[in-house]
Amino acid sequence: MSDEQPSGETFTQRQERDARVALRRRLLEVDPSSVRDDLDAAAECECGCHPRPGNDVHHGALCPCQLTDAERRELADRATRAFEAEQEAWAPVREAHARALASQADALGVDAVEEVPGAPLVISGTVDGVGFTMRERWDKYTIAVRKPVVDERDEADDSWDVITRGASVDLYPQGQVDLGHALWFTVAAIRSHLRRVTCTHPVRGRVRYCPRCGAALIDPALGEPGPPRWGAR
Image 1 (tube, one colour):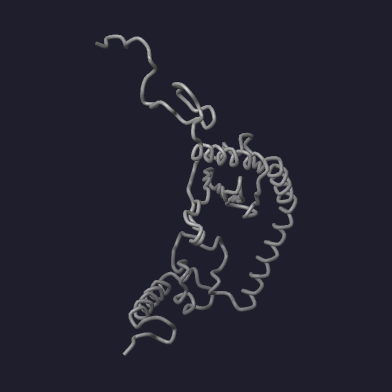
Image 2 (spheres, rainbow, N blue to C red):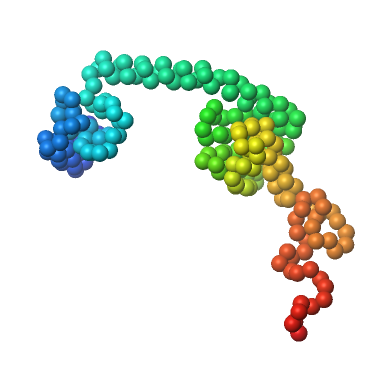
């Protein structure tokens, strides 16, 4: 016989939930400060604000479990209006970002779009036929390229290689968001990576670095040739 309940909870899960509700109700009877009218609704509420003295989870407002249906609708309408007003206020900024990104992409000969109109900043596209994504959040960024398909008979591999990480000052050296420079830096990092992984080092003679990709052709751990160091035997 299955212990599945009509609500989708198992019998054990329902028992654990009932125990939590009962405990909350006992605590609310001692401290009902977060309750307006409905003690039962507060006991059933899972948002974690009942009771939690000294922790203003809802920033001075009532918990939604204490609102009437009409109050909840009004709260939702206010949130929608605030969101639409913010979107309208930011529209000129987003348009400027889009123009800067499109202009730089055209100059560099790449495809690029801003995936998220806000935070985190995500720019994706293709550079020389290679898919890429750049994500910046909390003053840190990551640049990744799509892994190549080893066998064309296989489906495209949706995995990525992270080629570099760093601080956001690399993307915005002037201290303000600049999608044009962010794209330039991203493309430079990707093309440098592609040169390194495809370069055959077409040089002659004993040179320390490849002039095309910058790779070390002599073990970088070795010192420069010259007279022995002081005290060496």
